Structure formats: C-alpha cells, structure tokens
Length: 119
Image 1: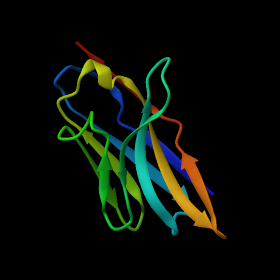
Image 2 (image 1 turned 120 degrees about the horizontal axis):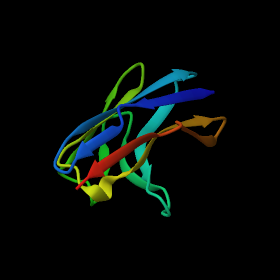
Image 3 (image 1 turned 30 degrees about the vertical axis):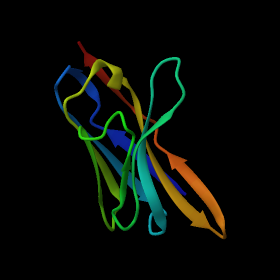
Image 4 (image 1 turned 90 degrees about the vertical axis):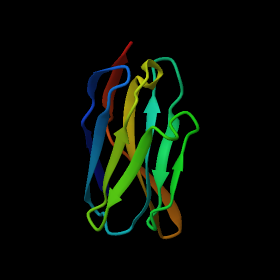
C-alpha cells in the first residue's frame, strides 16, 4: 500500500507561482511513474505532468513552459513548480503513483490540494 499526501496549495493572483509537494509513504520501494493531475469543478480529472523513474517528463500542452515536475529518489517525493499561473489553472491537484504488483498495474492517489488563481 502507498499513501500520498499533497501540500502547498492555496490562493494566488494571476501570474503568480506555487510549488506543490507530494510525500509518499508505505510500500514505496517499487513505485514506477508518478504524476500530477487536476480536476476543476464540473470537469473530468486531467493529466498535468508525469515523470518516470528515469526522469523522463511529460506535460499537458496547456502547462508546458510554465510548470515543472520533479522527483526525489529514493523517497519518491514529488513536486510541481507552477509559474505564471492563470485563472484556468484553478483546480484540485492530485498526486498519483503507479506500481506493478504481480503483473497488475496499481494506481494510488492522494487526497488533493486546492489551487485557486484569482484574476
């Protein structure tokens, strides 16, 4: 079992910056890919950025050039530096970790942290 706890959300003005953190605990030794997702009111959860164990990153087009995902090994802490924030970035941001157990891919989610960007 993996437990993920996000922190760092809050209220920021348009153009501002926030850094999100995600701390993993439990059975973290075999975590593979990790990522950040977000969900705005009335919308589906969407990918923001992912990072592999090798450090390969992937970003949604809407955040490229503004957000940076990073990861500390071996404790598998995950971070999201968000710069030049826009009102449309307002959402609950979730951390996700992925493991493969006996051939099955398991996804673990945090409880989310609210980011609100005022115009």
